[in-house]
Amino acid sequence: ETGVTQTPRHLVMGMTNKKSLKCEQHLGHNAMYWYKQSAKKPLELMFVYNFKEQTENNSVPSRFSPECPNSSHLFLHLHTLQPEDSALYLCASSLRTSGNNEQFFGPGTRLTVL
Amino acid sequence: KNQVEQSPQSLIILEGKNCTLQCNYTVSPFSNLRWYKQDTGRGPVSLTIMTFSENTKSNGRYTATLDADTKQSSLHITASQLSDSASYICVVTIGAGNNRKLIWGLGTSLAVNP
Image (tube, rainbow over all chains, first blue to last red; front, top):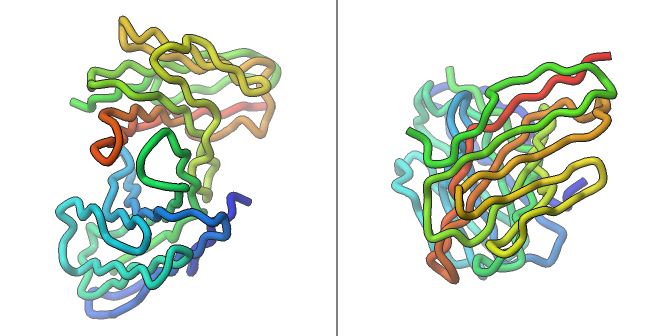
């Protein structure tokens, strides 16, 4: 195990539903990330948090709303999603955002939007 | 056109055989290059990291090379095992400090058959 857990592992939701993805890291890291992984596309960085503060938002639609209550937990709140949002959502953490710090990934949440 | 290109897109080999995966990049300024292994249903796990001055790095049966002049890297897998079946992703970090950015390749899907 990498020390990063994600729940749920699979999620099926309708376009009008509201759901949340949860990520927890047990590595004592200070930076956390949300990525989207779609078929035939490179990993897309969505959000970056450093010491609980959001430092990067890569033009992500507002239907995705992140929350970082502390350095160990990260949430991604979902509402009124579209079918094209179906993908694997990966959470990662690193000691800090600068330097050659390795990012440790969770297993991901496989999201299907109907 | 992806700024980090990997080849082949997919590869099938027999258990015990060697193989080499390629990664060519066009991005700059170069900071480091990582190879990640992603098993099905899991997040990526780092195999090696190389900076500008390093041209070879090994991790068990995995050996990565880097030619920063030609902007090419390879990942060589020796005496393949069934557990090597996975996607191998090349990631180039550009910039430094708070301006660093990770550029992900699409990955090479490797299947090792008995």
